[in-house]
Length: 349
Picture (tube, rainbow, N blue to C red):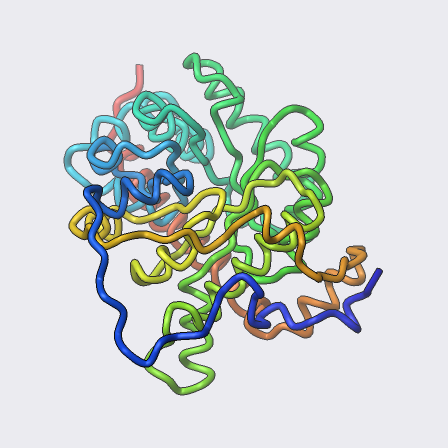
């Protein structure tokens, strides 16, 4: 068993990805199916949006939302009735109205997708275990009020140490969790060891950091640091038999998505889903659980001190986690401003 001090680099070249490229350009192979439909044969496709109409268009298995996506949907004219109903429900209570708004969008989405709907806990609770647990319970109760079973909902929590401990308790209560803003193998291992239902390791945001750090315009998909990070997490999970679902997220281009074909789940924006729909080039499986189980990977004994040290040593993960939490919190405040204006103008019974 290894510790954080003698672990291999989380961005090492994964064994599964071959880098032997022929000198001549490969001939493009075209399939009878578009790339979304081909992906669905290899992985579960999830819609990364709060736009109900976009979800209907692409027929994904699951859907994920976050404060940024809810904010974008809430300012669309076609969803004003959802916002107004949440304001009426809250009767002037801002926190209650915000929770109801998240649940209202999630409820609409649950009528379209057959699988999970992810609803995020307020990012400002990311370092507060007890209040994260309380907020998650409140959201689940709201869903059950309108007839949506808790087994349809993933409570989305930032993967801080405190958030992971909240998920540990919630999973014991039968409340399934999606741990988000995963940028490090340390976060992924800690989540798996408390039996989180699902994690969302980010791809594009990692690539953004390395582009800036290295002063480059981009990376080939097979060399993309975000792709390599998710690949290593996937291989680690399958090597050691963890049941936690790996759902790659935060894509900047469709090549990143295709390089992770075979991952448990991939959550994809409507714009990239459209690009994949418009292309029929052959999609090849890149990640394989059977192959991963045979890989020579050292196990890491994950404790709180090891977690914190590994995060401390990973500038990218530390910076992107903090940045992500700040970004979600900022969009919550923007959404609260919209709701506050409606509360001021509302006439409650």
